[in-house]
Length: 390
Image 1 (cartoon, helix red, strand yellow):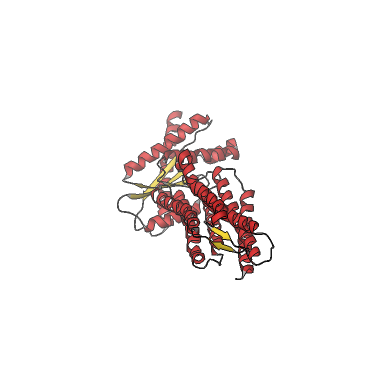
Image 2 (tube, helix red, strand yellow):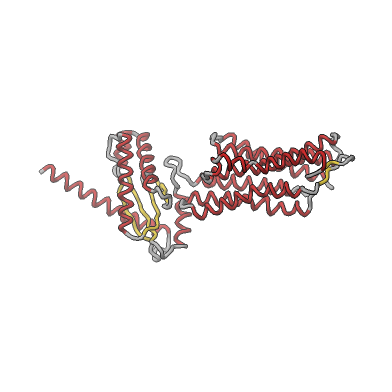
């Protein structure tokens, strides 16, 4: 067997996960979810390091005694099952699952780790999972499949849960995030089949590393799609979402696009400064989130003081109710924050028509309705001012 190849592959995987861990530490937000993700990576790194040590011992390049060889393999088994447990915790928190908060369920989730840890100790006496012979050579035990099954148990459970949540979730962004988490299993499972068939090829480490890198990159790309000031979807995410929805438009309900504009926003900026202007935009974003309490509508910041909402509604009556709901939410926020100026929205909305062949045409139609609404508002304000003077 070419043990140097095993050392090289695991060293490369160890380096990649090290870079990933360094990046996470630099942007560490101290959330519980983030800590579990980092613990999963660290557990994987420990497993890879143990596999490197094992390969060097087997190649006689590292003259360590049988006990050291056994401990190396034992730590590998425990760290690899711990990686699965920490990944489960990370995903359950990301899914906002109540199961991770339940004391008994969390204890139950630790059982595979406990079983493997006990099995490693037992293996020292009877080779339950593995044993090291008198020539200091590692051999699989009769029940090594227990370790393989329990390791896959964690990833299978999280994949199924994340996939089901992605289908039921009303929020577009959350649905995409859950699908990314569900895809974690594909890499170690598909590539790991090689290692089950050919035990001496270290393909599991490659699969696990690819899975961690894939999830990290995709979730980072998802964050890039978020407007940093308001926390809403940005224009890029809006275009992706609209492209998908316009292709799969349903006849069961109508697809509405709302274009919202903050009234007299320039005056707020000029009078109270840009810091207060940003605070006003955040209040507007929070009002949209509050009005969207069912989480089914797509909410985004289109640019400047313009926002877009995409919703499936049954008709204009529901659309008007939604506008009223947003206006009431914003009024309540302003009252609570004691805002010293008038902060309100103008609304324009349209339903999707198959004749709107492009995204730009759909948005332009809503923008035209917004323009007409602002024109009516200005005309009404002018008439009111004229009446007051007379």
